[in-house]
Image 1 (cartoon, one colour):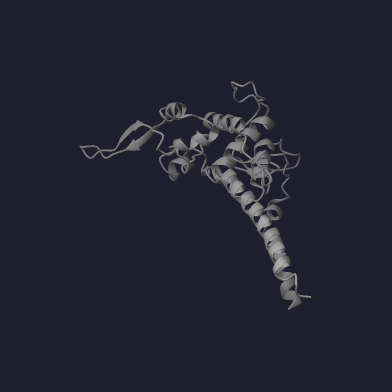
Image 2: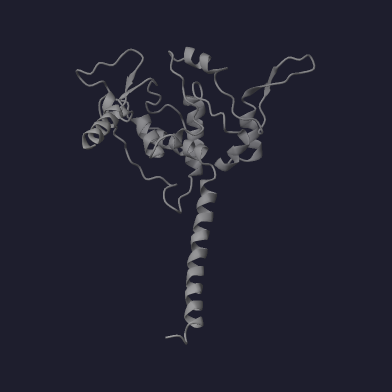
Length: 251
């Protein structure tokens, strides 16, 4: 029985991505505004992150679960949201002739994907399918630190390391070999508020936006949770005092 247990443990360890592919991942930690029970999203950072997504990521990655009207959470007003949506085209129809057609997007529409289908996406990316980013921040443990690390941890290939064509070296990715080319190099975008455009700063803004996309109701959930805990604390105190009064004459 002991021998069988040891064998199973060895198989699990050897089959894990990090070990099988050659090394542990190196995650970089950062202080996030949304961490902790009282954490909130940074709207200015999210707006910058949305800009990074549209200018750098949207050419390959979709966000099919996000509607333009959701951007009110980022601090945009209705006019700004309409203006953002109008920059995109979505397929609609059929019309009176039975044909599908393209039209300017409206706030109720979801963000259109950059490719017509998965096969077209693979064809445009050397066979690799770029994942949808709507829930990517929840796809792994420590999602925020993982995304931040992944975006900012592309390195030169170490001496003696063989990297197949079409793969890139990233110390935050299991196995250190990833099919996504380095997306950020620093100064990739220009922010109207004059914020930093280093790889680390831009990666942090994009991570903030992707965390909101994956959990847009986080702030409301935390407010309800804090209120519930406060109520329960008061209830416990009142219950204890009531119990003391009711049983005061019992020894």
